[in-house]
Length: 282
Length: 229
Image 1 (cartoon, chains in turn orange, blue):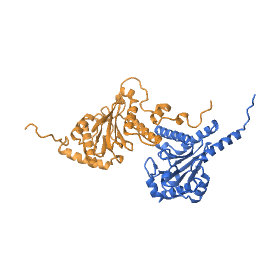
Image 2 (cartoon, rainbow over the protein chains, first blue to last red; image 1 turned 90 degrees about the vertical axis):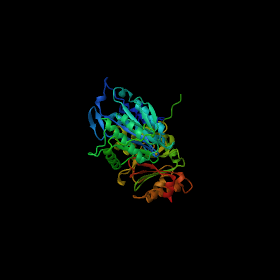
Image 3 (cartoon, chains in turn blue, green; image 1 turned 60 degrees about the horizontal axis):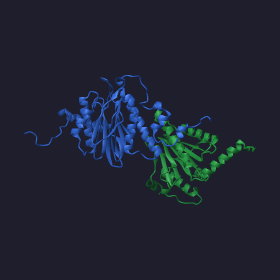
Image 4 (cartoon, each protein chain N blue to C red; image 1 turned 135 degrees about the vertical axis):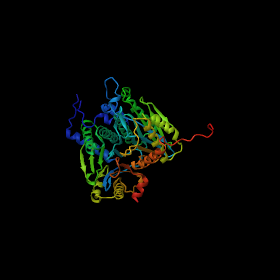
């Protein structure tokens, strides 16, 4: 046999447009979720990221995440970022084991870009959502040992011309959410808050304000979710996807909105009251 | 019993090289040239789907002439190599030089080890932070690699176009000037008859050093019409 010079044959093979599949063949050791561990529970080994919220509006969809990572009762990091731009039209937020989650996001970003470069066009939003489910399934073994990752995907669907939200479970189950959703340890409180504040037709500013309220409510009742840190000027990361693409909202704008929110909470610490229909007990 | 003819190694190499050159000369030309804000790729290519110019990575672009299936194969391999390197190390660690080396090795091996060489010629371009740091690598069918300055022309009429570029190209051309120059030269020398190429007949892309992260950007027909006016 002649010695192999130049690029190995795997590089020149035709057929696959998936970066993850290519990695699985050529360098499986660099894939997240491929590490092998001894038996036992590993939850306490690494920091965990907490709450992500997302909601739709007339313009598209917003996603926001708090900045805290915890290890048991210790705050592991105050300014971790858990909301990322996935590609030009979608964004991803992550809760769960921070190290694996951040690696999963990196793989997902390359996966989307790789497909786009090789095929010359982007995946559909449904295609992206399904790819993420497949990548997540690769982490199931670690999830069972306590190193679970739960992402939240949102994006602007160019075919349907509206924002869409996809939630996942650790087994790679994929569920489309209609209006809003939250994941992470503070998700129950955030979802309760979103349920009361959500308006189907909301402007971008309104939707961001609702997302910030929901994160504040989550931090209010869940010790693992970080509230806005006014002293250190650490605010939630907020991203928006609309017809023009995805962008992260500038920190200055969020700081202003958070200051306003906190001012109102001084008067009413539980946040805005939802109105109820007339005709209750008199 | 028949005795196989003896063919000298020199003759085999020469025959293969002639074969590859003939294949490349049949194709339409591609010009890659530096302008003040980056690197411009211009190809005469009426197809909107089968590209001769592509993005490899954040600052690296690819242009090719010759047999489509062969250079497409190399392009995909380049994207895989760059994405794997960027994922395993960091996005800043992906360089045009390492990609050009990998292509050179691959083309060289194919040329010497297989009966049919690839009938392709490619350019790997990398846009730098400033004009001095722009890199153009030209790779030929036998794996030769050359580090070019300012401009490269490939394909059937490469020689005539290069001779003209040597006279007309200067550093600091604007995008519109560079595009008009390339379109004019492809029209003059691209085929037997002299013609004016319209935007619809061109495939044009840039590596724009001012763009954040992914600098590769295809130029639409409407933008081209404005620039060519």
